[in-house]
Length: 389
Ligand code: HMG
Image (cartoon, rainbow, N blue to C red; front, side, top):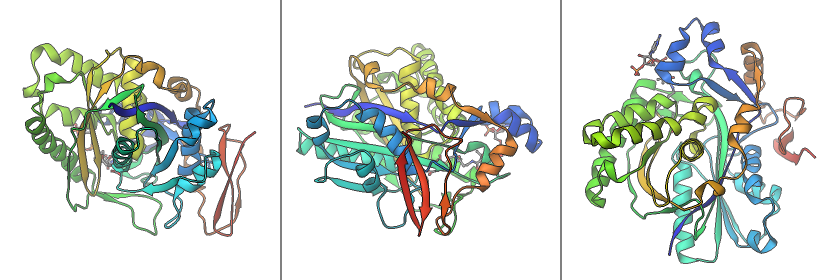
């Protein structure tokens, strides 16, 4: 029985910052951002979006036009986020209501930095294996915030990826080959009283590279696989250069005849991430969408997926593509990214400072935002969402 990702969709807010303009304002050579880090644009979050509304917007693309019978087969919503809106209540129960899903379901939030989306997916695969007539909705949604003028600023971003997990998947099936490892490390974290992440940037890159290298060695031995068994390696991309740094470590294991294909696919897999920025839990899955939309692959092509979450957890697993995988990417990610409105650096700084805190009541206007689901107000420490129509 095949189990995997049936359909996938993506949402990002409709504003962006041009990183050449940011570089000029920060007195940095733009090539540091464009070439050294490999980021060109960054999605900017209006006050009317947060991790829950973005997740609802991504998931609604997947669920529109589904029959009642289909919707009733969804037994769980797994909401992966490290920028959730509450320390206790799960973001998934807001999604259950916004998306009009049935009452008899589990609605759970999962956190382990950027790795949470992968854990949600693995949990969903296991559940569907035991309950083959059921489906799970996995949504990975985040706002990456490091702070104005911080070294991490150029690697901010925001967005959500939603996936339906089922048997007979139309996108790709899971090969039950995961290798994972974790270790208590302090490379990146966000204390409870802060809305911006703290990070040791160089250390975080070194640990990412080390985890990929170690996990790949174990994976290839355990699963008897070589680099040439894969059509592509897809990475969690906090910034696009990170994927290249990781893959370069196993360059000596890549057959000459395979180098061209892997490089083309690595570049295809970073096109959207270069323009959106880090979306933490959803980043690996945006990269998968980017690869599948920007290069032609074949039925049964095997894709290595490297998931990384600071703090630290890493996992490598593979997917095998279904025949009509392109039809299983719903919505139009390229169009969504291209139709965002550019904000100036001053406007971005104003929006960054206007990030609404729950300690005060706010009425949020939607003059920046045409998305379906929005955060409408914060009242008595509660977030109230609604649709825009
Ligand atoms: P920095 O100190 O500003 O940059 O921080 P740098 O001085 O290291 O330069 C960056 C690169 O640009 C270097 O290339 C320079 O040589 C190059 P490299 O040597 O690394 O290949 N460069 C230039 N290239 C062309 N022309 C120029 C030029 N000048 C310099 N003129 C850093 C960069 C990424 C560390 C910072 O932005 C940061 O701290 N970001 C946040 C942390 C991060 O993304 N870490 C990644 C791994 S951890 C992870 O993935 C988990 C995460 O997603 C969180 C989670 O799990 O929840 C972050």
